[in-house]
Image (cartoon, rainbow, N blue to C red):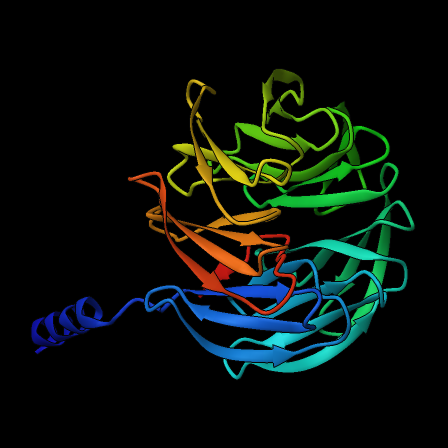
Length: 315
């Protein structure tokens, strides 16, 4: 009897479908969050939000989406199962990039452009619980859960600040290119990549020593940067040349350039590393790239001003 029960449970688990992945696109000019089923490439929901949504971050465990509004000094909290707004959290300042802590600690980190700080939010109380000092005008932010480090690109300090996700401790301040914007951490935590929009570079930083190991040349005004989940490719979105440059993460050599829409902002991937998705701020589209073929296979129309700064794909 016990054997039959175990076999039945095993067959049931095998038969269970994987949860569908969705892209959550913040449209800054339209004041909307568009929910896209990435399997069907169909829009499944639209959520109206307050003025100027920019940064996004998903909490897959709790089925929540957090959205920054730099012009309003608030963060919107959305239930991703019902696709309904839960709350607006008043942060003050100019909340920009955002990252949800995927650990058991229920906290959200937000770069504050105006206050030169990282804001820490408790989503349960919906209150700001800490302000962590960083460089001038922090923009992009990334959290590496494996090392429990937060990486913050300081736009007007030309630096990357490395913080501890569990204590107020600052680990390092690393020199980057001119006007750093976005940050990505490799899945194996070995490298941190930082785009710099004024000298068209990507700073490659060692994930243990926090020393610069290489500076890569990018296209004009590189903004978004991301590494595929299989750790094979580095994608960089260049707003000045309206393209994405793809680098081999092992050799750090550029292998191809892919034309996308106008003013590409952010790159994210499907979990299986088959497709990349690029928000095109000025052409109001989402470019879908076949990673194996390294070419665009579709341009999906989006409401005005799609940005989605952050990891915008999840369950």
